[in-house]
Each structure stands twice: as C-alpha cells, then as structure tokens.
Length: 285
Image (cartoon, rainbow, N blue to C red; front, side, top):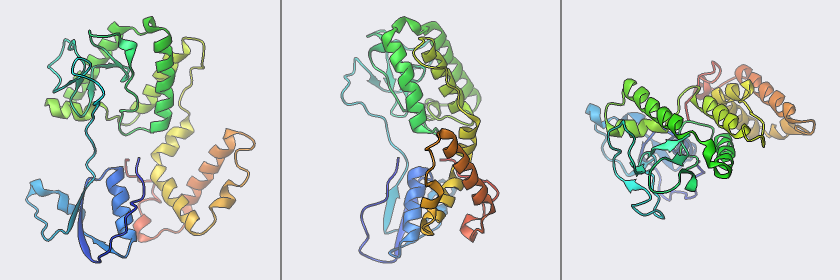
C-alpha cells in the first residue's frame, strides 16, 4: 500500500530519478508531477543496462520493492538462503528474500522441524487485490488450525512442484528469477486461488464456498479507469452525490453504482493525459 508523500521540498527545479514502475513508483511520479516544486524527467532514465546515461540527477527515489524479512524467527525456523534445487522439496523452510518456500496454499510451511500449522504466512502475494485475498486466506487458516489433518500434504507438495515447473517453463531459468515470480500472480490466478481457499474452508461447514463474482473481476481489470474517474469527480465536488444513500438496500447498490461510474468514465471528455482510459487500457498495479 502507498500513501501521499508527507514532505514538501524546499527547493525548486530539482531533477528527480524515480526507479520502479510499480504502485509506489507511480504514486511518487504522480505526486511529483502535480507539485510546482519539482520537474520530473523521462522514465528512460531507468534503462541503464541499454547504455542510456542520465546526468545531473539531484535526487534518486528507489521504488523497487522490498525484501522479505522475519527477524523474530531463528535459523531453525526459516533459513535465509536460496532455495535448493527441487524436486524433492527441501526439509527446511527457506526465505530467499523474495519468496518463502515451500508453503502449502502459499500459507503453511512444509518442513520437518515443526507442525505445518504452527504458523501461516499471509498476504505475501503480488499483483492481487490484497484485502479480499487476505479474507480468503484467513478462512483457510482457521480451517487448517482447527483441523490440521484437513491439509493433504502430498497434494500440496505436488501443487508446489507443479508451480515451480510451470514457472521454469515460462522462462524462470535461474533461482533468482524463480523466486521473483513465485508470489507474482498473473491474469486469473488470484481468482482461482481465492475460489480454492474458500472451497477448502467450506469443507468444515462453517462458511460458504464463496466464488469471486464476475463484477469484481471486471472492476479490477478497470481499476485505473475507475480511479481516474473518481478523482475527477472529487475535483468537481460531485463524488458525494454519487454515493448518497448507496448501500442502504444492499451490496448490489454499490455494484450498480460502480457500473455507472465505469460507463461515465468511458464516455466523459478526457484530457491528453487520460486518453488511454477511454479505451479501457489499464496500468497493471
């Protein structure tokens, strides 16, 4: 998650190099482009490996992500190292700094030193809607903690090895590339993952086997279109009228309102900077 920078620069006309085009990098770029204190340069400054050199940079902002760290665990609990070649799966849990391996359902540590359901590693996935994924994971954690035997570890091990094989086939030719790709979900993976977690949790009889609704997938694919349209409504002081009374009759009112907003976004006059939104092209965040 990202937030608005809380420091206002004191000098003008600085040259800023922002490295990273993920959510944080895009948020920083947007903030800098909207303030009169800074001038921002071309994104080509990040392509140094292609021989491009950008000089006279006053500040460099690194928005290149983070490394995973669990300082409260000792080396017997999780080893900080590259994951050994597999199959077979290693007998220890590994933190490569970019992924934790091996985890059943991307949650539960499959190793030989302590029970698999001793701990769960939640919300480590990239390119997903984080809060809905966290809800599905929480349901699965409750089920596994209440009934550890419900985890089919043979099946889970096969799933881990299958994902590893698929990523290697897709081009992850080194341990580093495999680690970077491990928690990076693409296309429909997050929807299938949530459906599978809810189906597993529902086997206990304590919750329904919820499936991701079509409208959620459509809204997610158009999240940047919707965000830009909402910002526009906020600037015009029209946003409150859009949500007045919405939700009093149920969730369907919010869904209908978002569909209206999407229709509004695709039909409103757009400036040059928003020209891609009308066609529904989105930046993947």
